[in-house]
Length: 273
Image 1: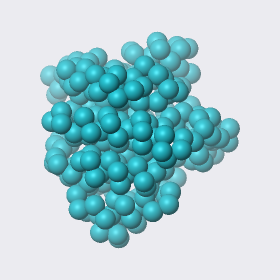
Image 2: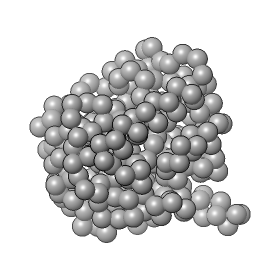
Image 3: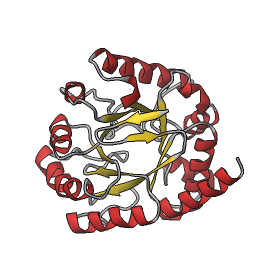
Image 4: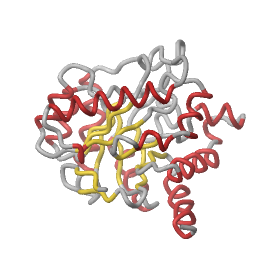
């Protein structure tokens, strides 16, 4: 399976490690550590040295309760980093839900749009459809970041998540976007209870049925804290364990903060295959 993006056809037969680059001052796990273009680009380079296969650059926190960021501010945070990152020789993803930001980063050569809103805001779907080749990741989110954990989903999450993702992927294909450009993400921690998050992991293979690539983002999530009692900065081992379990259950891409440790764990996993 190949994930076709602006400049790269990414081989999903080998699990891909996506390194997280937060340019925000208020990320739930590393807010402010990599804010500013210089610090963010140095972090990009460090993640690549650690073995990241692709980079995911974000300029707006989507942690529970996070406030929205104005377009101009997100552009100021993201564009200088993307401009530098596209010269590093790996696929560059941008984590954004704003059509204006999508247009701007794709014009700079970004390869992938990674949208927690699944292109539901404004003309985001049209922006992606108008691009000849960019990749896209559609994520399931119940509610919106400001209040999603106040009233999380009810009932069995898996059929609801699967139906949502299939519906929005098919709508994007109807606009002319080839299926090979689309990845799906069940949205761990986005409007779901701890039990629902772990149920999605336990039954994750069901999400592969429609034939799309699958991304899993468990890194440092609060569900891991609930299971272990660990604070966010202490969740390295649980994050790596969750990434391995996700890959074991068919995830093609894992989105992580701790790249080096995840790459090492996957090397052992591959040796055991």
